[in-house]
Image 1 (cartoon, helix red, strand yellow):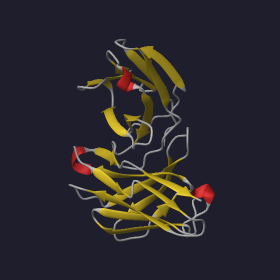
Image 2 (tube, chains in turn blue, red):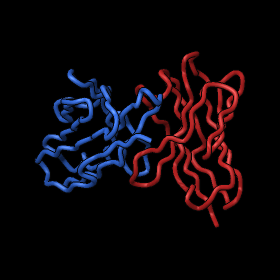
Image 3 (cartoon, rainbow over the protein chains, first blue to last red):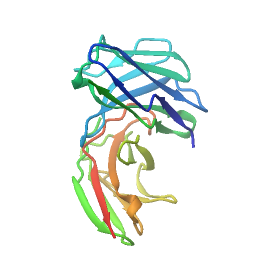
Length: 115
Length: 111
């Protein structure tokens, strides 16, 4: 099946700094990608829909100025956590629909720890 | 998006068949039912998807009654490596649109 990658797999940063997470569809194109956040022992929470060539659509309660999303190409979406704080520490996961297979593939996730 | 309800946790033993039932009373006509598996610190992995009746693949079977208000994921002869969280999702556009995850079912397979 198709593959979605994320980079980095884990990152530790200081409070107040910004962190960029990349999501790539490796062998298919994705005009839309999705970003999720998952806290320990909890389910995935949809944060936003990343749209190639246009603005991302954010879910209610997700600050668009804090979680910047850029979908610059058909295979790459980036999530930047700006001015990160310890409460932003979480597991961030992206997904990309493979429309020809009518399925959606998830990345392996990025573990963010803000000190 | 239709809400789903699953048992929070289930225990089983190696070699047994496991059935996880999901309720989705408000499923819409164009909604599909999809199940994902997630291991700790990994992204979810697609297991199976269906619209009605029964679907079977090399990993699992999915049973959907005529009213489609529930579905049952069946895992034959589970092993320790099947210990994971299983999510039932309901969404239109098959499996290519926005997905809303419920609480999932944590399956613990014991030796």
